[in-house]
Image (tube, rainbow, N blue to C red):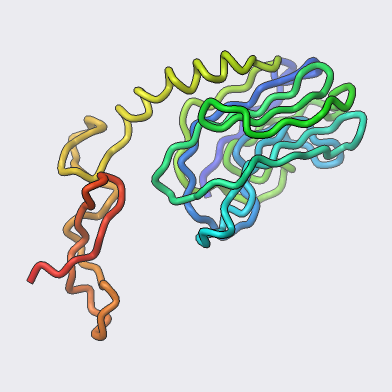
Length: 231
């Protein structure tokens, strides 16, 4: 249930457009909705990036990005990205933007995946509100994001598609450099090997005895693991 709360300030107000950007590696959660980043606001939403269907581990019911803010059409005008697999091990570069005319876009991994028609002036909250990262973006408790995040950013203007592509391509080497693969090496240079994967711990591969008498082993792809019997 960890999260970050940034106190409200005039510098976080975005009356002429905005961009929310994040690298995320989400895991399955208990909540359908989890907050990624956004300025608190419920009566009129300022700028929100949620993840929808965060609790899905069913391939046919994938997660999606939910981008919402208040504008001339609605105090909660939202649109969604196409679905993507939430497997807990894949980094996703997510960018949502709204320009001064209210036209909204969602980018994933450098490419535009959703956009909506302009709908007039962006409506912010009536007073200065904090920004939440990893928690309910309407100001309440709960809806905690589960997983990893890196390189979050808020801009008070809509960055271009070319800038989004540059941010994605320039960010890949850093993400890969700081990601620990399951390969017997210390990829993230923290003095430990394969620490997120619980290698050599006991596991049960579903046999009849239900005992943890097998061992977690790295798969050849360097990301997933398999429970195997080494006896």
